[in-house]
Image (cartoon, rainbow, N blue to C red):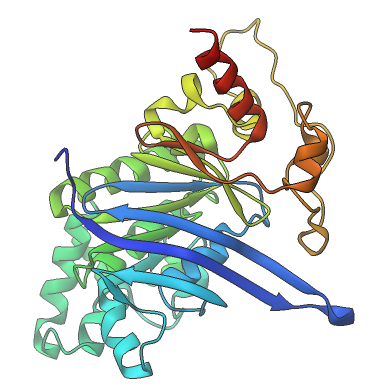
Length: 329
């Protein structure tokens, strides 16, 4: 892996708001700043409703941000025309949580796989069968699946078809939105191994949305932790278990279960529930669930600050602990 990987995409100050009842506004994403690199995986993790899926819908131009920029190779793609958006979409493909819902049940697998290539006029009709078989081999499925229908396949097989279809256009960025959450654990592992292999072979950037920190830290190069529309910590995937410092990230780490864990270790839960996205408190969004909350946390919003290479955190408590440690030297 290159020490200075190429930047493929940057999200700068992305805000997404939706109108709600009684004149209220729901802010799904609030000042999101993230960088995606060629050949690397950015994991975005958080509880349901934190805004991670809303963010990736803006990345692939299914939704437009209320404000901010999404730069693809330096070009802002949030203001493209319909034709430009369609042309650009072949560079950014998505794997959805439920592949069956994204397939036409009346189409055979061979047609499903090659439909994007036909839409962009990248192959001739006479080449469809051979290309479909090539794509099936790529995701380690039998070639005779070309004549099957989606309902004749298992969940893991359908997700492999979904991955093959997304990669058929040779995109630079592959977005996986909870792509393994509906699969059995053993199948999850094999699908992740497939994605990691394909990423290395094709040197693509991958954005992986997940609520399972234990899963995502096993293969993501960088992890962004979201809470109520905010990025509260970004950290290298390999450092999550040992170096996470934000109280929310540490709570997620403490709530992990593994068959390999120390049997004497207690699985911790996060006290109370997250407030409604329509009623996010002033100041730190995590304040009502944090044991380190102070008056400052209730009045001011902490900003992301770098505390180590590739490691940023938005937390006044962490900031004060770091200042004390530096003052004691």
